[in-house]
Length: 384
Image (cartoon, rainbow, N blue to C red; front, side, top):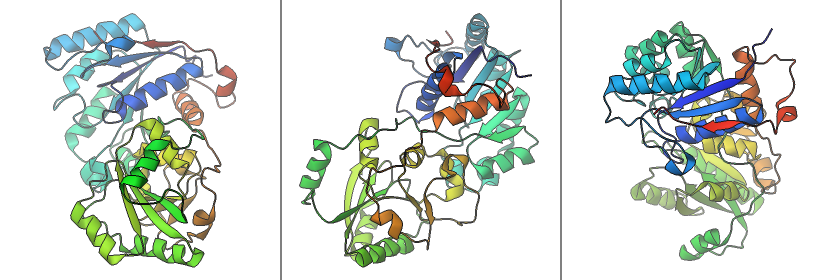
């Protein structure tokens, strides 16, 4: 019989939105739990909190023992049935175990591993293979360790840690919003006509030094020519694309146009996804599960062209059923579709259900989360 999911405490290092993504994820997950009828507490243990939202923090300048003592007292006061710890290498400092072990002592624990950065660029045995990181996970004695990427789950299993894949959902809301004057202005400043025979293709993800874009760009160019359209790559996010490399692309693909938009706030990203014919990413499919913007694209039905990696690798669960196109795949259906036409696939409710079922906090036959919506009780607290 499933336990009653009455109170869950989400513990993270930072709850400031837009800082590293883990705070956004924690806030969004808490809201999803609240919509499922779960009383949810938010606790920030390391970095600054948001005073306007009533969030306090335990700054790193405090004595580690005092931080652990205060965090433990705050959790005991909240009386959670389960603690959901957000964890990444060095998220709580270079030696997080004493703080976390002290704060979480006696709590039923689940861990979400945010394998940001290293795993997206290195093999999992290197990215997550630091014995101290796996050692810290093992010492916490979590009931379950969640991850969004199949390769990292394999590494967790090899380390004899109880693990399960949990689909990523984006903190960006699923919306039919359209871009406003800001995109028109970006076109104007680049000397481009906003209305035209464009195929709008978003380039998202870190452009690694070892990523060869030639096959991807060449395939886009050839398909656009076949359709009689002009391809325009909108480069957004923290791509780390150098001016020299972009110029090389321009020289080698004179039929392609490029427009660099940089990092944009959430409401603009949502609107931008609704005008894209295609999203191109240099991140291999197996490691795409940690990319919130890619999850948002999947939720809004934007086809994703994966410009690197082996197409036969397992999809992260967030992209099951999503329109994924590997290198060499047929781009014509994606480029011929009407942007913003969906299908829209909100993902958070399914992720929350999987989380509760994995921890025996809700049965598979239990009421759907939609039926519980409205029974919300979200307590924004912090360990202080």
